[in-house]
Amino acid sequence: MHFIFAAYESGLLKALTTPCDRQTLIEKLGIKRPDLLDALLDVGLATKELAIKNERFFISRKRSKAIMNDKGDILAAMIHANITYYSDAYRHATYRMQGGKLGDYLDQIGDLVAWFSRIGEPIIKDFIASIVAGKNPMRILDVGCGSGVFLQSAYNANQNATGIGLDIDEAVVQQAKDNIAAWRLKDRFDIFHGDIRHSPEKIVGPFDLINLFNILYYFHEKDRIELLNKLRAMLSPQGVLAVVMNFHSMGKDIAAANLNMVNCSLKGLAPLPKLDQVTSLLKQCGFRKIDIHRFIPGSTFYGIVAGNTQI
Image: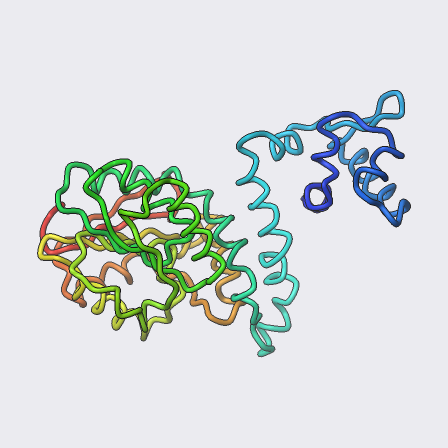
């Protein structure tokens, strides 16, 4: 994983989509320390990710090939996340468990978190389609809208869909605005920068669907009631709140357990809650109909649809 990260980040893998000799690599990559390139190439050969023939290096293993194909972007994001902020949580675990300061760089990794979060996009897109298909009206508020892809998904499933995307990260908001424009959906969706706890005045209900995807663990337990009460008040009479996230793994889900390790190590995040804790909280906040969707057997990645009537 360390090799693939460095080889991808440096442009080495891209350069080696066509076999290259050492001198060509030095020129292509603008190398100033050839000994470090040699060391990286040696790791690639030792791990069998690279091979050499007639003095030309080339990619030989499926993992490195996969990251360079059309769908390799998600794999690249996964590796970047694990080498950077996931690794940080384990590297400083002893210090932080013993009372040291938590990591305080959440605002610096917004782009990477949004990139990594795309791994769940196909599942969530289908989930959204199942909620919005055939509904009219369908006004949506997407809290933590990221790239805006889920607003696009809602429109693809239901041409009546309109609404608002909100995100706290300015760079992500700009990306979402650019995407919405590129998808020719500017007349359907507005994107705003802001925090749902202090949302812009233009964000006014009612909404037929409010998305809360991978967001709830940015709120500590005492703040979740206030958030959920606020969102429920913004729903139309037939409206629903859709929550998607990893829940506490209970020792059974490695992905959720890994994420929870990061959450507990970073300032601004809260430990992953258990599924029954969130469903109980939704009931406490007045949601009478709660439907639970388990996306993957053996996983604690769930979707919840909460409202006052069945969708």
